[in-house]
Length: 68
Image 1 (tube, rainbow, N blue to C red):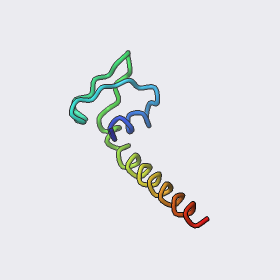
Image 2: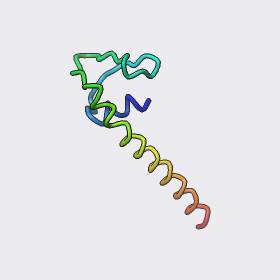
Image 3: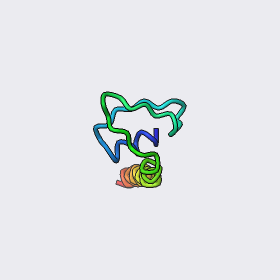
Image 4: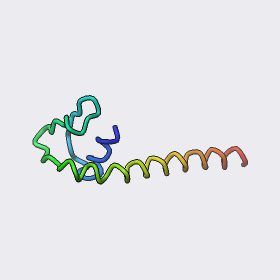
């Protein structure tokens, strides 16, 4: 899933299929221009950070809601 999120961060309109969550097994669909593996790998830490921040915000919001 993180690989797809990284791809969509680069190209929000990308259509892909990934086998076994393996970055070496990406099938580019519907004429989507392939993105270099290095570019996808470079986006993965950003996606992980974004996901961690979203989780943190959700937990914070729940704690704030509980204290209201």
